[in-house]
Image (cartoon, rainbow, N blue to C red; front, side, top):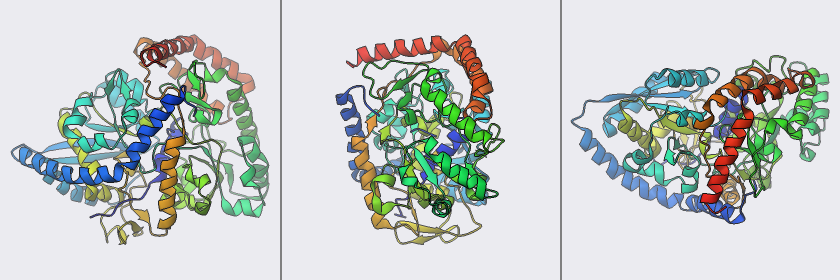
Length: 551
């Protein structure tokens, strides 16, 4: 089946949902060195421009490799590979897994057991498996929320897949630019297979507004440049719309450094960020900045005025409110084209991939296009350090990434049963059948392999993709792209700081805790826990990295 090309805005939608709900998608400006920026973005754009050719070549090579693998494993006893991901409940999964396992067994003499855990519980489940040493074969991980890819990798939770990629997953390896692989390395080793997506690397951040309410209150949404500019609109909605929540809850500081022209170093909530455009790359405590204080004031005001849910600090799942259209505004991770392509207005990637997103069709970007240091680690598949089937797990990752029939089966179900094919590139979901909740970005690479909703204007979409990849060439690049923080020297301080942020940070960020009373307490607690030691260690490692790389 050659149906290819459709995007799931969820690496940016569900990733964003994950980052909002779990802690703060994600992913997600100026380079410390202009030459370094040019080199990084040129690598990404070169990879994008060559992807169609690479996809064709790898498809041929992959078929040969699959046949060889099948022949070599014919005498082996089939093994079951367990794969853990986050997702809402999925209907008819047993039927789809039966069909998927026919493909998997035929190609690599294995079967897949896909373990789905709700987003609200997945980070805890993953971290518990890691801390207890429980064996697992494959697990989705990331550097946002409580998924802690870098910390877990540095602790030895994941298998080193540097050589496994070369030996068992050449297609997976070849699709991703070297600069992006650098973004998931820990101590020079790769511990996560990058789920490289069709939307490229560059992103932006902003707000999506519910069209009917914007039109009703004649709100000048195109003039919005910051959170505070939304307050008058929220006041109108609160006054005039029963049952509508003006703004969805989320940690829109710790999860989204780029809003404030900053980037994280390692996992997002850990103290120690840097500024885009800072050639010296000085590390600082982001929670001591004027930007954080101003953000907290805005969120506190919104909370007190009823613009956010009263249970925002304990809310585990924002999806029901989105799907029910109960929100006037939702956090947005738009692609550069959502602003730069006028004919695409109202047809954002989220709207095309998530039916609920169509209601929020006014999409306003707050930031320039950028590539953050954590973009490569926004969605990765890891292999457990204690897995008994590391090689077979790597083969399965490669198969999902290279066999489009398998990928489409997991993503959309069976043709004419779960969806109706529309031409070569589009589809229509059949109601009340298998639906993977737009979470296919968790299980593999979507580049040039996705199907598009039947209502998609493919002419606009082709322009949109061209705009996305052009943005990859010109996007601002993190000054620490390619640097990976080794947290081992300060692991005790990290554990102590994480305890403090788990206690107070979300409440502060969603406005339920008064910053006038508790910000100083929070700052003192993270300092006592070792924030200064962590920042000093980050600076020490960055300085050594700069010297070694001539920066």
